[in-house]
Image 1: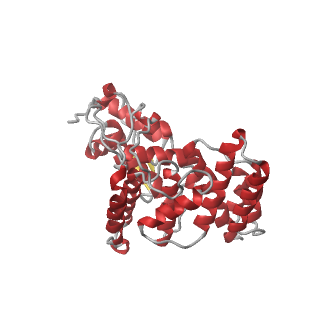
Image 2 (image 1 turned 45 degrees about the vertical axis):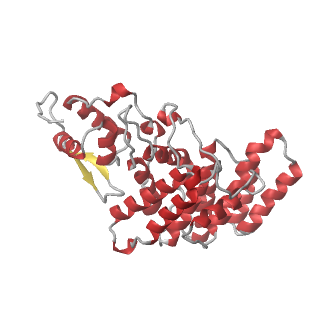
Image 3 (image 1 turned 90 degrees about the horizontal axis):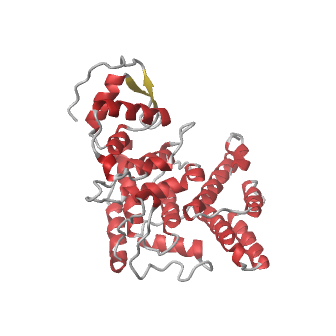
Length: 350
């Protein structure tokens, strides 16, 4: 979506900027299923951003385009990416939202009608998905027989929460749990992540957040992998579920994407069992330095989960190495004020 970046930097026309952000998210989400949009969609997107056509008219233009081109095998993926992108843009441009399980079915039906069988219908079998980020293992998804009850339970819990009395960390923790738990139910056989992402964006806006949709532009694959890590546990491999990656991602969606912030999928990859041995103090020093060199906004919680030590241990090593966190918790970064002398002794009870 970089071809439209001028709309993001244009402060004179906020409506164009918002429409740009919606298209950035809509196009970026296709990467979760390995799909890529076409140049034609870019033309339609630009017309919508400029205000020449509505989001609904943009959908009709794209659908008509593929009706004329036909349904060739070589066009299948491009057609799905373009049509679903235009429909996502339409849905997240529309302010309507209801916090009910049927909202998910409605979103899925709108996105995939005519592209897959039984759009909007819950899956009728249990599934496995072999994930790269899990070395080929799978998340245990919800049993298909309990999908309606599971969704109702998740939504009911959300209805009773009062976000106005929470601080930002508590808000983030609860919203992360909401998105993660609904995704794990996996109501639909295909298109589940894109459906949950649209639901989340609309829900966040319903709550009054000024959602930064650009985060999905280049990072939707990270979003999916973060959902996987948030819902994967293996006692045999010494791996616990870890929501820190998803919290980091959603923090940027809810509170803004810091300049220069990057998401790296390789950091989510589950290490082999041999790598789960707690590091020595010297090794942990090096790992912390590497983490901060790669991402100077990385949280203590993320480093603790990554290296299988406590947050207190991470805090002690950060202090020893001279690192302090400057700025707000959501937008600040680590700065090293004092360098530890090489070889200086340090006693740490890991």
